[in-house]
Structure formats: C-alpha cells, structure tokens
Image (tube, rainbow, N blue to C red; front, side):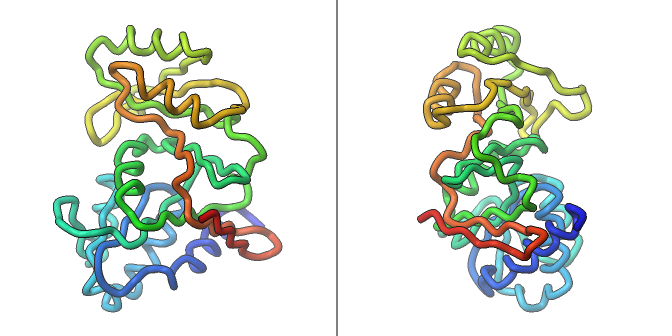
Length: 222
C-alpha cells in the first residue's frame, strides 16, 4: 500500500480524539493535511473548537475550510495532533523537515497530550538517519553553525527557498548519525547561543497512530 494511503488511514483513526470544543493544536506536514481535510469536511461539528496551528500553511488550510484558528488566547490546549519525520520505540521524535519545528514544539509543550500520526516508514529503532533540523537566528549564523558542528555533527544548508521558518529564522540540518542519547544531543544544541530550537522531541509524545499495511497501530507512551 502506498504511503499516502497509510497516512490517510492514520488521520482517519485520529479524528475521534479531536474534541468538539476548546483548543486543539494542529501540526504541519503531509499526514496532517489528510487530518485537516477530514476536519474541513465535518467543519460544523467543530464550530466550538479553536484550532492552534503550528505554521502559516496550516492556518491557511484551516481558515480556508471554515475552521477557527488562534495563536493568541488564554487557556489550555487539550490535544495536539502532529506528524513526525522519525519515531523511535520510546516515542521520541525528529521533526522539522518542513521547517516548523519551533512552533510545533511550542504547541506540543503547551498541550495536555501530543498525538503523532504517521505512516510506517517513520518508525525507526534509533533516531538520526533523518538529519536533525535546527532553527537558528540569522545574526552571526556562520558562527552558530560552527558551534553546532563542534558538538559532533555535519551541518547541511537547505536551498534558499526552503531554509526559512515562519519566524524568519534559518533552518539547517545536522547529521549526528544514529543517536544513542537523544536528550543529551537536544540539551547540548539548545545551550548554544543563537539556536532557537532543536528538532528533537524527547519524552513529549502521549500516543502515536501509525498507518501500516496490516492496519493502524496505536501506541501509548504515557
């Protein structure tokens, strides 16, 4: 079965977790687009929901479908549903292939529960085959990149049309190889002045919903 169909199956399975009122985080990426399509098709059911988007693209898709969004509010985000570039057996993630990692992490950190929807290709035994995205300030960016490489990785620059976040910052990719201690790498990179956010999501996932050829698998972590 092709990946698109598997992503769609994961999105369908996630729909019952979307509450009918309150604040709901919605992530960014190809799998989440299937979820947004389903939400738009039943938009009247979610008239009392305010969706908190993790990117301008997600905001546009939600608003175009008649769904309410906000990034300025008081209250608790009940559920955040997002995708991932890699998922390890403990629910740790690499995210940020679409350059939305900072907003994705802010929404996830301010949500009661984070649900990750993905196809089976995103499951790995160890994180790191997918390079770790890092968002950095443009100010003295070359020096910041050198300091990142000093932590034991090789940095790759993205094409100019794909290297900026919605925040106006630069997003680069850091190759550490397969990572033994994801929390350690996350902490070391975050401590570098000029680093805004790191695309390692350690210990944040409540549940993954993964579309597989054999069906849809749900895994709980908390």
